[in-house]
Length: 110
Length: 112
Image (tube, rainbow over the protein chains, first blue to last red):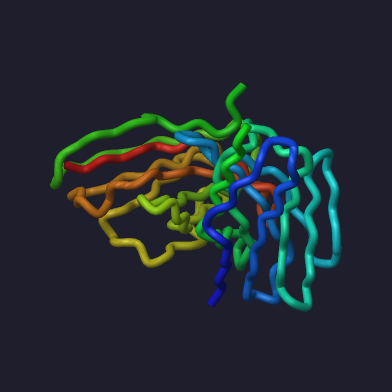
């Protein structure tokens, strides 16, 4: 079955870059996603990447995909305190349902 | 305008009661979902509906019954609530086979 793994916690200083990593097992995944969840809030779709791409950049966000190693990463440049949240990696499986990792809590200190 | 909305935002009830959570989307999507997020923040798909028809029903107790009166609504009814049902329930929607799935704000259910 599908499985998505993430490290649970990352702490950075404001202005630094953050890199959140994710591994997945389903080689047939067509899209891979990053969602952000702020405390007490819902899930916000940050970005996604098609499986035949290696990289996608969207303003401060850079997604890197290594399909051979089934490794996905999210880089946030110039991390701000407002970026503090839980970040979920997800892959789409049959019938378009999402399989999520357990989330990485990003803490940005001033 | 809210794209995916859920009511109520908070629901506190006693064991054994029956409760419903409502979800509506105004995005014109034809696929809707229910996810459950447990106390450790783990998110798991419960149900998926496409054009009012059940597509996915993961291993969920049959006390949970989704109902889709039309493409824009997917409600979740829960019978005989148990302590273990306490969680945050998220509704989501997308186009069929769509790459972008949008989530509602969640309903925090607490069973006492």
